[in-house]
Amino acid sequence: MTTTTAPTPHPDPTTPAAGERRLDRTDPATGRSAAPVRCAGADEVDAAVRAAAAAWPAWRATPPGDRAGALRAAARAVRAAVDELGDLLCTTTGRLRAEARASAEVAADLLDEAAVAGLGRAGRVLAGDPAALDVVRREPRGVVAVITPWNDPYPAAAGLLAAALVTGNTVVHKPSERSDAPGVRLAEIVAGALPPDVLRVVSGDGGTGAAVVAHDDVALVAHVGSTAAGRRIAAAAGARGAKVLLENGGKDPLVVDAGVDPVLAAQQIATGAFTNGGQLCTAVERAYVVEEVADAVVAELARLADAVVVGDPADDATTMGPLVDDAQLAVVEEHVEGALAAGAEVVTGGRRLDRAGSYYAPTVLDRCPDDVDLLTTETFGPVAPVVRVADFDEGLRRASASAYGLAATVLTPSLAHALRAAGVLDVGTVKVNAVFGGAPGGSADPRRGSGGGAGYGPDLLDEMTVRKAVHLEALGEP
Image (cartoon, rainbow, N blue to C red):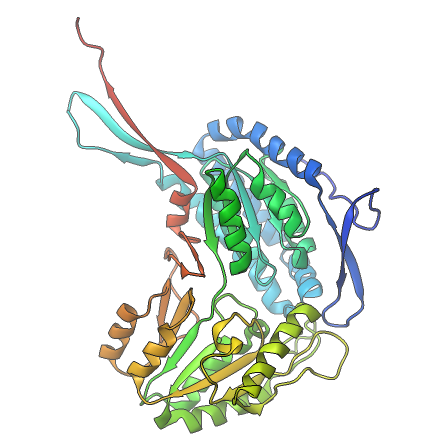
C-alpha cells in the first residue's frame, strides 16, 4: 500500500477472515447493494501505526525539498486519475460526477500548494547576542492520524495529508466508512509517490478510528467530521497527551439584509442549501431574512428549488443527486417533520422522493421556530429553512445563537452592516455577499462545537509541528 512502485493491495472486502467485521453499503442512486467495507481490527491498526512510526526517522531526515518533490509527484498522479477518482466518488456517495471530478482536481492543487508553502515554515531566527545564534526550529510531531469525512473526502484528506507529510510527519489515514473506496484509492495514489510506510491507510468505522486514536505512537489526530465524533476523539487523545486538530459540524447561517435584491438572495441561499444535497460542512442550514424582502425571497427560493433536476449523479443533466444513504435521509426527514410539527410552513418539498435510492426533494420551509433540530443541529440535507426577522441586527443576534461556529454569510448593501457582521459573528469564517469563495492562503479557527485549530491554509502547517528553541555559542575559554 505504501511502496514506491505499486501500493500493497487493500484487503478484499468480499473475503473476510474469521472474526472480521464488515459494513454493508448500498448504492445511494439505486438502493442496490454495493461492496461492503472491511473494518481493520486492532492488530491491523497496530501494524499500520508501528510501520508509520518506524518510517518516521528517515522521512523526518529527508531534505524538505525532496519531501516537497514527492508531494508534487503525488499531485501529478492524482491529476492523472481525476476521472477515475471522480467516478468512484460519484458511485460511492452520490456526488454529481462533474463535482466529484472537480474535487479530485482540488486535492491535487492542495498537494502542490503544500509543496510550496511547506518550504517556508522552518522556524525563525531571534535577535540575540551577535556572538551567538538563537533560533526557533519547527520540527515534525511524529505519526499523524488523519480521519476524514465522506461528504468532500478528496480535499479534506489531501489538505491534511499534504500538511503532515511536507512537514516531515508520517501518516495513518482512516477515511470515512461511507466513502471508503474513494478514500483508500486517493491514499494509494499519494502513497505511490512516497517511500514505504510513510503513508498507511486503514478502513473501518468508528471502532477502527478509535483504535487509531488510542494508539500511543500517534502524536497528533486531525479529524474532519461530526461534532460527536470530534468530542470522543478529543477526550481519548487528550487523555494521553496527544495533540488534536478538529474541524467538526456546522449550522451555518445566512442573513439577508433589507435592500438586497430578492432574486440574488434566493440564488445565494439555494446555492448554499442545495449544492451536494446540502451535504457540505459550510452548507447554508439557516436563513434569517429581513421581513421587508422575505415574501419575495421565499417565492424565488421555492421557484429555484422546484427547478432543481434531481436524478442520477452520473447524468450530466442532473443538478442534485441522492443523499449518501438512507440513514442520512432519515435524519433529514426527522428534522423537517419536527419543524413542521412545531409550526414551520412547507413552501415546497418536505418529502422523500418516490424512487429507488436515497433521494429527498429540495425543500423550502418558512417561518421556522428557533427551538427545533432543523435550526439547532446539523441536518446535512437539501433543506432551506427561512426565519423572518424585523431587521439586520435581529438577524445577527439569532444567527449568532448557535452551539456551532464554523462559518456564516451575510448579504447586505451596507458597508457598515458588513463590517459589523464581521466583528459580531463568532465563527471561523465570515463571508459577505457570496456564500462560497475566498482567496488561497487563508486560515480559520472554528468555534465551539465546530472544532478547534487551523484546519487549512499555511497555519495548518504550524499545527503539524512543534517548536524547539536553540541557543548556540562558541565554547569559551575556561
